[in-house]
Length: 565
Image (cartoon, rainbow, N blue to C red; front, side, top):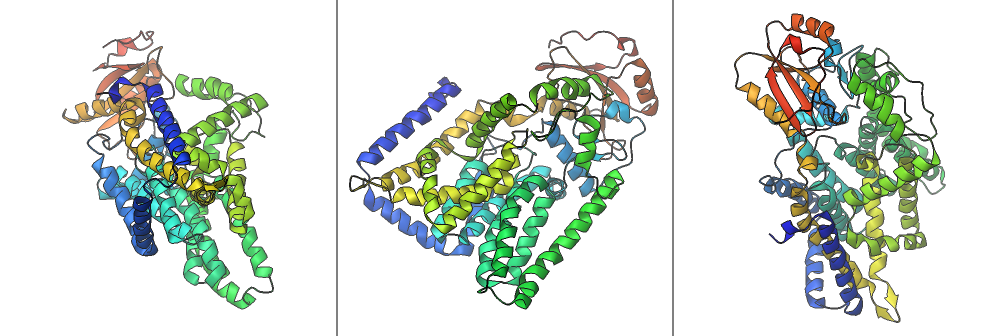
């Protein structure tokens, strides 16, 4: 009850005071509970030394931990356009299809983040759709999300084992688990992130193993990681992979490297063996969805709808024609206002990115750890990891969008830098006193504290957690009414255009409920003629309100009044 009395500022204040108090205590009493910390650390190190067990344990804890939270945080309901688009892709994959032909009345069904010509399909790259398809085949798309996040956390542990001692690798995996794997939107939505993060971890973990042993297995994992990145976040994945490609080429040219025939057979050939089919699939996927092997669905959607720049070096395009008011307002009015190629917008969005990245990937106790990041310049391995992280950050800040899952390919290297900085923090001395050890321990304790306090805090934010639950309730209501249904959606004057309701399954005509947009009397008549065998409803949606009534053609063209329950 006490926590419920605090607003969000109260939670932040609690965390801030807890951090300051704990750091002050750790500074002046660095060896408090020394025997307990040493005993716990020794047990942790012994377990981490069993590398396979450590990887498997993180995988299982990620699954079991999130399942235990289901009474408070149930299976997520989609609410953002990207989620519905990924779910559409997963539904198509689960039915053995990459796309469907254009729908005869597609004008009434047109919505965000989906292409309707030359095929009905998602605009996104296929990795997240494949994950959701696996989940759908197992019973629900979210099962795929949960498994992918667990694989991501486990792969991060494996990757860091190639760069540092096992106990530090396990700690880095736990950082990912506690910050991202349990309560972030990566696991509580269908937006994705885990696929690209897993691909980045495979690349990061394969490189040191290849340099040491040149095993075919590690080269195959490198190729798989690159293929995952190409099918999830290709731009950010390319930025992430470039320094590793350069490092491999320089290593192959060194006189001390293995003979060229060994490197070609055991490193280059396996990578090519993975990447050639991956590239062929991408070309085939593009051809099936857009009719052009070199034109991605994402680029097709961008050319069709977007006028605002994706990268800050781009420029605003001329206004386009849009078929309905909601899409026109979003892409023709709001996006050009939010995303512009100017220094003022760049600095504003950069500040927003820093805030969002901190909220998703870090915690208050990470401040002293980050202060030790420059100390990584002292050692070669630390310089390399820090350089890759900085390069990835530069790439992220060149993109106008600020969603944290854009940083997914570099998640592993970010936590590698954080763990290395924590190691330096432990060794800090002040006036001959070892002060860093206590502060480092306090930082980890604060992560556990933040994870615990995040549960009641997230319960206070149902909009973020539970998506368009009202839309799901409408579907549930109509599922109990015999026959098939058509819902024609109208939006009130206070409706937020970012939260559209018009999304459909892959097999639109085979669906129990079809969602359509109110396009006026003429287009509505075509829609009704096509779906003459369905019961028709008119749903009026306004801000936080909705009204479902039997459809009356006489209401077409009338102005929409504010809806009240």
